[in-house]
Length: 311
Image 1 (cartoon, helix red, strand yellow):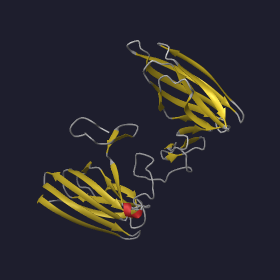
Image 2 (cartoon, helix red, strand yellow):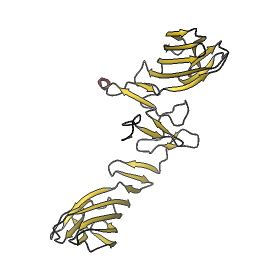
Image 3 (cartoon, one colour):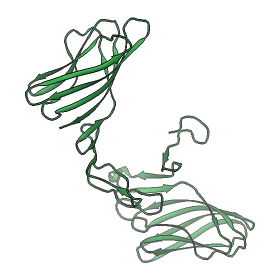
Image 4 (cartoon, one colour):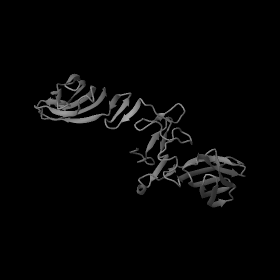
């Protein structure tokens, strides 16, 4: 999201591996149908109609789910200017096109559409001896449930083809060797643990926790059911003012192991000053607790950590 600037401010950009696309395609969903039905709107495209073109393919998209298209366009050339709207509809066999426009000059361009190999194509012809500049944007929606490319469907490559999401629920999508979306059973997202799972090796998100001042009795950072998370590496950092006039830091790794009857940790760390925070593992009622005690410095500590684990 752009936060500064003029033209780009508050706009969303996505990187396609080569360049940034800024609001290239947006979908507007109908909440009254459970956000299933939607219209898809493409950003403005700039192209050229070749001189003396005959049924030049302006674009081609999947026909299924794209039964209705509105195309707003403008033309500019030596003949003058045109601004218009194309209304296209198709039922899988027949295609109808209507062009409504305002022309300054004598336009030499005509439009048509057809069905070809499962796609609906917009065709343009010109009797102008010179090329013609064209800009257009499209609105697409479906007669059935969903919208263009399904419920939902994702473009897996930088082209006009569309494919449904690959794999099963929980698989992380990635660009496969064919250029479309792919998935692998060893590459998953564990939503309950907020972690990427690589064949059972889980890497969690960065989390934050406040270390309270002067805690003589152990306080809990997090807990879990014993036996469900047996081997754990906790990478962490702590920032705390210990009265030296500046904030000191500590970074370390806690190795935590547990089974159904006990838990144990080792804390390896380094610091710019002794922060007065000591970690321990506590086992009770089939639950493992990562806990800490802290000294009195009149200041809390800011802890960040991420968990790597496996069973």
